[in-house]
Length: 348
Image (cartoon, rainbow, N blue to C red; front, top):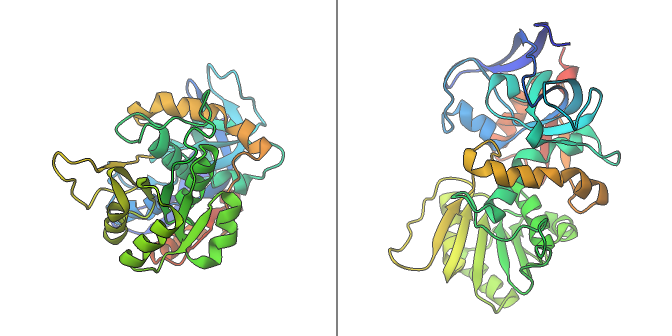
């Protein structure tokens, strides 16, 4: 039982401050919550952006991390589909009790799923935030998505056959899941940009063409035109820096949509067809909750069947302490084509 016993957690100690491991109480699950013993926690760009104040939190010290995989330690009131001992993964949030960078965390039942026997904790931890960013962006009908027909509804599989899509940053975590979803939706061609060292891997996920990410804007536009004679109605820019947004914008047909993961840096032309949409990959956002409840309901089935495959990962050493160096590597652009995960239980 969770009775205010201490646990180890990684704190961002102050605004633009340092990370450090300390103690905090193990939280107790409330209604529709699970207490999860965290065996694997994945790192994301959003975690270091809090450190740099690009993502705002209300109070410090704060525990970060959004990707959890572990074992149900205790189930709160109203829980019907989970029991103590279940292997699960969950999309948490920057709320201390629910954050991933600690040894025990709370998970919301609607955004938690069981890990099938064919997967381990590290594989499962790669999924929540980046899959949600891709799926919400492509399919949610809120302001944070394109509102396309999801592949888990009737008629959704291969609904977009014959329609090309460009995914900038195909080897990123979001890009890798976007490619898989595009494959299920039947997009053709699925054109991804990445380092060509990742070409074989991305094609195994569903990309039909992988173009060198170092091509100039003009050369990339020519290469895309050579691959698909059809106009490009959808570009998913999973990197969303100024340079990639400008490239994505230039690839669009006049009625096209540019899907972003960061705030827009391009300007829409007034009363003209091209538009941008920024994905907010949180199922906890009010406008995303109904959609995300449906998508999380199919996770276990899809993972067991291999319909969606977890992405490649690297395990960091030293438990929670290892996260500090891992975030530095992400910040400096030294992580490519893989997801970093840490094991909180290994913290000394």
